[in-house]
Length: 377
Ligand code: SOE
Image (tube, rainbow, N blue to C red; front, side, top):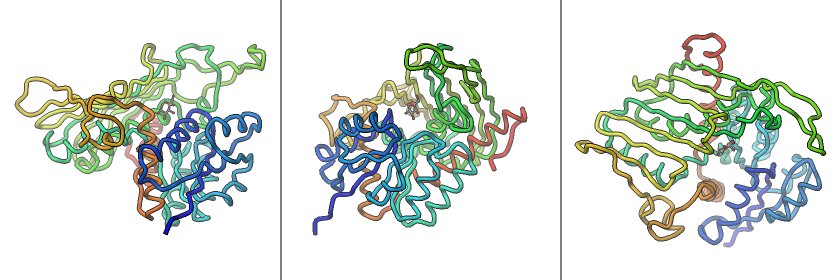
């Protein structure tokens, strides 16, 4: 029996809207076993911009009211600003509509808890879009760790460096407001790294027990420009430009994490390293087809090109050595999420995973405020 195509509703049409729309468009060609979908409704506030985006991204309809849109679709993607994540996602889940929500789940751990609870009460998938879990080299790394290639896991080290806010004249945006975003580099970038560490080693080291964190804001106000490009006003920056944290895992393993939006010369430099009793591995997003592996007995790291057809997802694309890119991680993520929706399976990373990250982000913020190490609550 052929199913009707899944009607996808998407709130948000900027960077993440483009990344997910591209992923949805790629599925029929590269993942023909994915459920059939239609890019049905694109939701946003500015009707002119929305119509243009819907045309470019291939959506049949637009809506400025997300509640009305929920009645028309089978699946809801919440790609809006962090402060818009909770209400529409909870409403969708209460109507039995599966949700994929961008990270971080919410500005606060309290709001993330309400989203986690709504997902627990709904019997449909609710995903947190930590797309870097879907990099073939990360999946390969997880396999090495689970096969014991690194032995007992002792240390994890992650950093996410960007430099789009080095210029003090870079315009103010919602990502710089604590009420709207929750935090800055910590939640926007740190959430990815801390989740990736959980994905790689969480089964072996347990959860994060305690943290010691520091948040820093270097530029404390930024300009808002008018339509002529002149400065209309200055607004306060109430979130961090950079963070650093030291964490303790249940097993006794430790983690060091940092992120910055003002690390001049670094564009999307997301790296993670894992050190065990028998070896190490290192991953860099700017070289996402490769994994550096140091196996027991070897003097140094070897560079593994993770592009064999036996490597996760690679057989869907090109022959060995014909590398993939950042956008492919969204195709993999969308394939897994929509397959879970169609098959009534669970999807990870879930809202529960997103909530667990929010607990750590909250603890890092509390540690910074108190100037001391704190427990994750
Ligand atoms: C920030 O610049 C950002 O767009 C994050 O919000 C995304 O999650 C990350 O994948 C790329 O950088």
